[in-house]
Image (cartoon, rainbow, N blue to C red; front, side):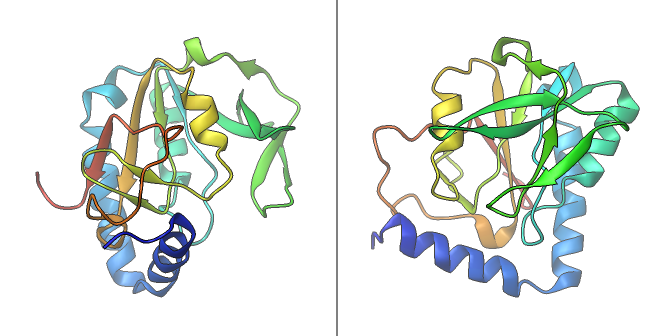
Length: 184
């Protein structure tokens, strides 16, 4: 059965918020380990990540691992008209909380899309074929429409959806690869 994206978004966020902490930690460790083995991660010089919210897969370990490995880490900053740009971060970067409750860098060097090798894409649900249910703002779909690099999403068990759970819109951009807890 197909539901509206808004209905699905609310349901998946509720599932994420109710996820048992021990299960979450165990699954996150597995996802992170699997991501580190992906050729896209291994070869990337510049990695785009988000600063995760409490119910999302924790990206702090990813940021620390990438920086330790010598990769440049970039995070999004929202712009008017539902656009965004990616800014390189380091230990001196300062952040401010946005209207959406997300931390974004203040100042910093904007890195153009063609210099980003891998984007780890956030979302509330994914299909194994790469359909993505985001947070509803369309920021990533707009950015990804002109992005040519690799895209990967990390999906906890509660985030893996069936292909027919929501209708895909013409402007939706699929993720190249969805890394899940289970072996494929």
